[in-house]
Length: 331
Image 1 (cartoon, helix red, strand yellow):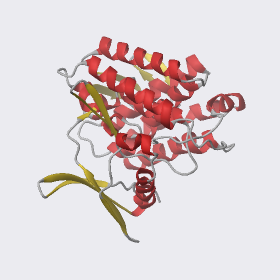
Image 2 (image 1 turned 45 degrees about the horizontal axis):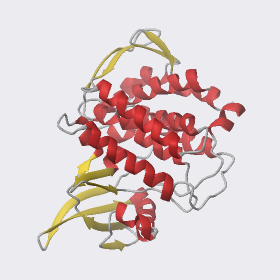
Image 3 (image 1 turned 90 degrees about the vertical axis):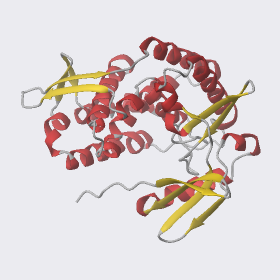
């Protein structure tokens, strides 16, 4: 029997004319939230100001909760969709973010990499989430299980048949980092707040998900790439068109993401790539990041099963497009 996924709840409360965010976790998310509290309370002094302050927390056998101030700042995923938000300001925020990550976070507290890192971190996670997606959306059985899909007139290998190719020894080696280290762990655009005040850019990085075992910084960057490259925030909000004929031998799909500022997105993405290249000495960072981005998309559908716009299917299809592009150009 497939068990349902469980997530934390977040609400806003007011106390003494001050707004606070209260995050509460139960069941499967208990350990993750306890680790999050530990992460935020044990940050090095030089980076504490870039993360939320925990004002109080409570841990019991049944639930975990913590409070943090409500920060009146721009959320990156919203800013990317706001035509009134200047890309130059977003670029400045991302430049500060990249500099912070490579100066004070990535590479710290280096740890060895388990031999099965790629298998457990990416392949098995995708496989588990895809089977859960299938269990909840049997109407999409042909979309999920067909060996190939015809998307916008072109044939693409579906996800599950791609695993044999990804698991070849030489591919696993190229996708395995040389070491694990301190990371954020969940660097999605909705976890990145920024605000420019009096000429100074400010950042807050929410919801870290890292353990004492460390992580691959490319996993982090893959989360960021989901928005600035793969446009996950656009798909999540239903700004895409989707039609499919699943009864054909090779299911046929028309799928288009409706990005309002394509040239600006590309320019921003190119600038981010260039900045990372300036700060990073890992020659395989981009390959691992693009793979991580595709894996994140293909692991995301279970979080959006109740979406009115069928975002789960949209995210899955975008993941297939990204994974095929990655396998064609980087393996």
